[in-house]
Image (spheres, rainbow, N blue to C red):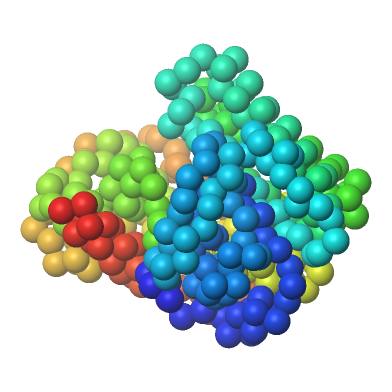
Length: 329
């Protein structure tokens, strides 16, 4: 099982007894890597014949369980002969994220994401996808209804994510495939990459090192965290049941202000770190990035999944980051 918490047993049984293939696009990112690791943990050596990984370049992923899965270059995916004939779920997790927006022109950023979109669509058509999961983002709401003070690059990211939602809904419809598209807000858990760009992970790294946790926001900032594992399990459960819910918010965790989150991290770790933050300006509106968790709560209830509280999520994420620090040392 590695860094995951206990798996949903009903889903494990479904996955092991099925013949479904899983194509993971964006295996080098946080969610794609976590999907690959989860399926390798559940399927063992059978993952070699049922899990296919695609990324920006060819390489090999040695999973936590020791299963070595080849990562195929997405641009050459249609050169393969992975023909229709078996149920195939495509988990689309590839996207140039917001931290890349500032490092290139808007035109280049858009062009590179459109290329990923076209290549992924070609893969879906070639393999005859029977299930399509497209990982979207709560940043879509920054495009549809911008929050005060949000940077323009967040709106560009949200716009492209929204366009992906609509585009891949059309691809799934044309293929007769089940389609789901969770809008992800705040994630926790293992296989996080670029931890310094995420509030929870950066707080943990600072606390582990005894550094000051620096919060720049001078307005209240509300967040609600959900585990990456629950994202994987609910998505796979919906597809295994032949459901096609379309777009929904992947949200529902307990709300917490980032100052309280930083203090929780310090308390859980037992760190000597302190919090540095400017005085809150009572005239500024609260920054809320939460989402509506009603649909997810219903799905979790149907599947017998329990909402993991924020303290456990801090512990899960800390355990993974601490292990990574040990590996790097």
